[in-house]
Image (cartoon, one colour):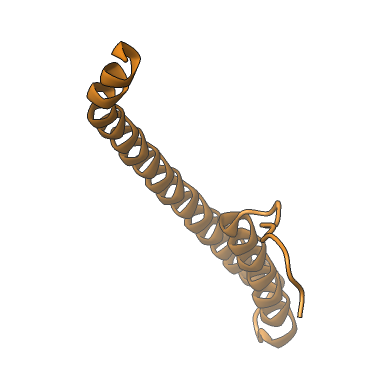
Length: 97
């Protein structure tokens, strides 16, 4: 059993999720190439559509993640400001002594 402080990894959860998403898209594209009974032109068109769909999904995911992070930062700033307002009278009283 390891004792000590917890050290978080440098990678973010969003970065890991995007990595797995891209791996999944690549595996899906490879499977489509190997199993598709289509002509080359039709296959390329389908791959282009799937690529564009995956790209749009990644953009949507990153936009949503960015909004959530901004929201969390705003709530954190509000919390800090509220805490500061509540502590200020105590701080002023201690300075007078």
